Amino acid sequence: MSHPERQFNEDPIHANRFIEFLIEQKALRFGEFTLKSGMKSPFFINLGDVNSGFAYHFVGKALAQKIRRTFPETNVLFGPPYKGISLVTATAMAYYQMYNQTLYTFYNRKEAKKHGEGGVFVGYQPQKGDRILIIDDVLTTGGTKLEALKLLRESFEARIEGILVTVDRRTKNQTAGIPGVRFEALITLQDIIDYLKLNNNPNFEVMQKFYEGE
Image (tube, rainbow, N blue to C red):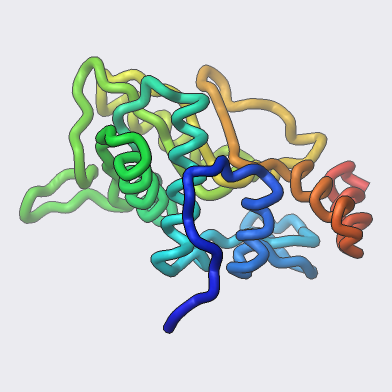
């Protein structure tokens, strides 16, 4: 099945274009949703709806550009299961295509494998001197990211460069960072609100109230 999406080039992918992409892919939806935490939300983000060659290429390119700007010393990408796995794969491929530089990738299993190669981790095995960047889909409370940090620090001597997600969906009252590590996102909840306001989208007001905790 062919898609009429616009062609790729090396132009920077800015916040508004990434938000447009998420809406086009139906990875960003507006309505009434109940999150895993039980919180009610007027929007839902599901990077599982990024599921085509074009879409992975686009996300990989956006993440690769962000890494180049903000985490240039990175040489290893870690993807928490499950969505982080496809994200690090797409990013490593895009990074090589764009900058002719190799980024190694790995992820962990939910349960340790007891046959074959065994172990918890799949892919590259970080060594002392490596610089690992954790890549995941969204940040809401940070719990999954803290678990990943703990696992990596207990398992490897490599340095953790930071955490990069596609969307930081924290509200105004959830502004605390993740202790001891740099955190970056392609877009924030405020970026989405600004985009909706700019485009006279009727979801703007309810999103603003959600962000303010009203």
